[in-house]
Length: 210
Image 1 (spheres, rainbow, N blue to C red):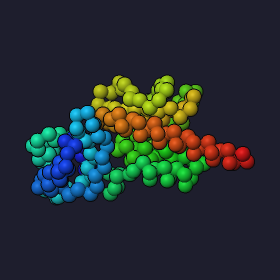
Image 2 (tube, rainbow, N blue to C red):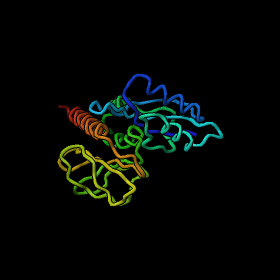
Image 3 (cartoon, helix red, strand yellow):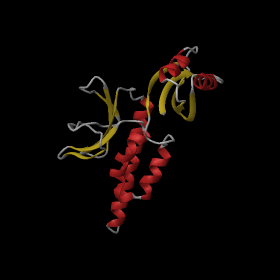
Image 4 (cartoon, rainbow, N blue to C red):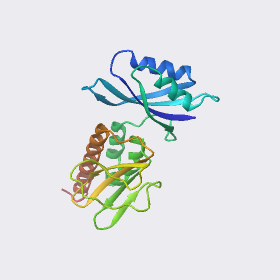
């Protein structure tokens, strides 16, 4: 069964190898690793690890094995049903540019996989939810955001962040049960949303003969 593990570890040579060995000894088989953030001030890296578990292996055992390592802390682990690989930002951009006419809707489809989130939605100030993934909450309220930023949620088990598309539309993504969106993830969201808007505008201009 696939799981996604987010782990903090010392940003020094050999740390990732120690984590990989611990995961393997506990019955996990690593499929892919992505560096999510590097905190140079305190020498910590945050990695997402996609892994498969052996039939009798328990995720709790993998968490315990990692946490037993000096300086290592598992932030979050959950089942991961989005496929066999982590979906990188560049791949998302390639999909958007391949079909620029529908870039804004396609962005919403791609964001949950790109950010390992549960849902995504595009909201209009005037019309409410314009487009969303199936798992998005039924009740979502438009909020004013000037840049990509984390949002407060009424549900203490949910975390959300949003980015501005234009004067009236925003993009929102959310996770249930964590982990919190890191500053680097919020910045990535803002960058992808900006690219999607640029791609959409270029397509509209070309269609108008401009």
